[in-house]
Every structure is written in structure tokens, then in C-alpha cells.
Length: 274
Image (cartoon, rainbow, N blue to C red; front, side):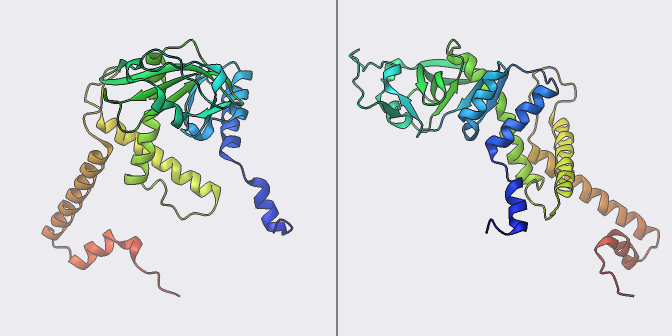
């Protein structure tokens, strides 16, 4: 298949997520974008991207997948009685380590209006070197799902790492709102230029909707007074109201129903062949 010229051309254009992340970081540095800390999810936690961040002297925080291995010789862990645990083998997966952490080792950390129960630990990750982990639960019972944050700054404490990483959350909500309400992933264009135009329209629509969600006199740190979904429903209602009033007004003026509908849905009428 690689011998096919058309396929070979497409194959050469393919870029992995890590490649794209590296390109974005290089572009940010080229355009002197002012930032000190990189925030990215676990998909991008790769040696290549971390090495580039180190080259540009940028700190970083990411999520750590639960199947990632830690070097057991790089840290010590004690049980509830304070006895050091003996870990077998040179590596242990995060998902195997977390159940070994005694509940008394967790500390409550409040960021904004949310309290997390956290356990920080300095370890070595194969390929990434020495890092700081923050295991975080959302309840004091330490039940349910948990997140493991990781940063190159071993001197940062749990509150700082959590506070910084939470700045990524609006990105996640944008993708959710964009796909659910604005058709971000529902396009049928084939060219990169057409897809780019569609994305730009989604970004513009989201920006206006976000402004509509803010209080009339927003101040720094103001929280939205409604969701993007609520704003979309209100806009749809306003559009339907305007449509009904338009039709009513022109009917009152004596215009035929067929003419009104023909005007409103002109773009949906089939084009007759000539």
C-alpha cells in the first residue's frame, strides 16, 4: 500500500498527537507567547514533548495514566503502622501503588469551592526523570475514581499543582459544549480550508454565547449565570419568536402564506434544471 503514490502522499502528511503538540509548542515559542507552565492531558505526556519543554525551560503539569510505571527505588512508602513497605521489582504501576497508600497519609486541600483529598509523592518516571505526583480523590472516604497529576516541579505542593491544572478545565467544557450544541464535530467538508472555516465559526459562536452567559456587569473571577446549553435554548427560542412575529406581521399586511414560506425557505427549494 505504501507503494501507491496517492497513499504515500497522504502518509507523509500524517502527524501524531505528539508531533502536533511539539509543533504548537515550537510555534508558541516562535511567536513569543507569554507563558511559564504547560498544561496537557495524559495523551501528550511523552518524552519528546517533555524534553522540548525542558529545552525551552518551561514547567509542565499533566495527568498520569494509571497504567504508567514508577521506579520503585526512587521513593519510600509506609503502611498505616508506619512500617516501610517492600515493593517487589524495579517498577510498579500507578494503579497498583494507590491501594497501598494508607488513608491517614491523605490531606484535605481546598481549591475554590472544592475540597480534594490528596497524597503527594516525588518519584522517578521511566523516560521522564524525577517528578512530583499528586494522587487526588474528591471525597474523604477515598472512594470512586481518582486523578493522578504529575509535574516536573518536585518542589511544588499539592494546592499549587491542582490550582494550575484546573485552568485546563474550560478546554474540556468547550469541547463538550462545542460537540453537543454547536456541531464542532459534525461537518462534511473535505478540504482543510473548509474545515478551518467551520471551526472558526464554532469558536466565534461559542465566544458570543459565553459572553451571553456572564452577568451584566462582570468582574474578574465572575462565574457564568447560565450554561452554554441554556444560552443556546434561549437563542433558539428568540429565533422562533422572531420568525413567528415576522410571519404574523406579513400575514396581517395581506401577503400570501405561499409567498412568506417561499421567502423564508428559499435556500431549501430545489434548483430546477435549465
